Image: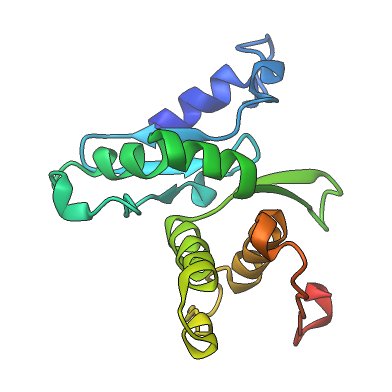
Length: 177
């Protein structure tokens, strides 16, 4: 929590009577991280403390390639490794309107969304048969299924060999429309 408060101070978002930092310096920032030896959390300039989520997978690297006791390595390898960083910057950051405040909120994927989208795209590109191209991405309630599908659709459209794909979206709630 102290690290989050420090980021808020840098962004001048704590409501202090005199300026503590400069929010403008973070406008072009893709994401921010909170690291301890054992954990690494990722969020954005718009994230509340509860929205900083632990990054637990270095995909596509194997978790056994690093010391699992040092959680910050999972975040660093999963987000800052050159290919992952470029992929996240291009395909896994988006903005959504907040219905309560009317402001735009910057969002970044969770580690499981990053992995699911990239594995699904790999199947679409490299499967030998049509049956192998399909599959299921399983999520629990409230885990970001809709966001995962938006990220996958975006990445499909940005992939030259798949750019003419038709994407059909079926929703079951009006707020998802």
